[in-house]
Image (cartoon, rainbow over all chains, first blue to last red; front, side, top):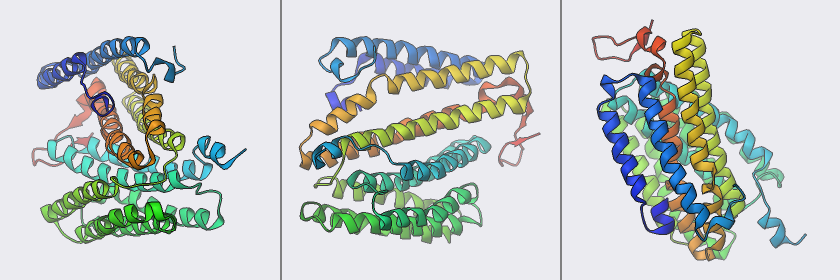
Length: 66
Length: 307
């Protein structure tokens, strides 16, 4: 979607995809809830960066959310 | 209020929300099918069915984006008449790859042809959309026939037929999406956001049901908390601004470009979002330790059986 709209992929998203792939590869040795928790932390971190960038960008007026 | 203003403010109708309830059941069936067979092939089969069902839902949505399906009695009757067959599709999902697969295939064919006919009766009346619909329908009408034929085949032949049908969906969208369609941006974006809600809602139901099944305890509570928190993060990731941005993209596009954006951002772009969130969170044995220890995998390579 980001590629469709802006024709670029944010570095943090690519890093997050890589991190989740690595996490899935080693997930057999981890507790399930721990894997889910780590995926949640990665998503939260990426979303925080994306949200800050969105708020500073020229599309920020589109969303009423703060 | 002028027609233009009225069009700009059109939202999902109660009829569409009623149809969505059938798809809620379909999503539940897909999630539980994947959950019962946690293997790569099981996941692949689940995603294949999910793609076909997603296409069926998309067909309703494109029809509803062109006109208010609730306003005219004939469209109300037609949409309502598809509900029994759509419910049969959803009911047949767990047995889609068994000897009951014909039920899924034939019910799918009936629904697709009815909705395609409804879509055609509107698109063919308009000179601007006629050629786009003909391009789309020339392939889209073949797809459900392949699904129905596949239902009468066995084993990998059925899987292959349904993969071909899934590919025909893509081909029909690529052919039809390059032309002009009537799409209401507000309505279209809202409908897709509602499907994301359905997927996340199914995930919450699966999380709650699994925790209830496992019995309350400290480890179950921790697992439930983590899984529910992940569902909330997924909600936030999408609903913080994505619906507004994609709606804006549609709104700003020229009529000839609108279908292209609708196809890429919504029909193609939203499937991975809903399929991934539903598949990820509907696997309770992965996050709930109590359920994980109660799941036994038989040695004959079959589906895991909960003791």
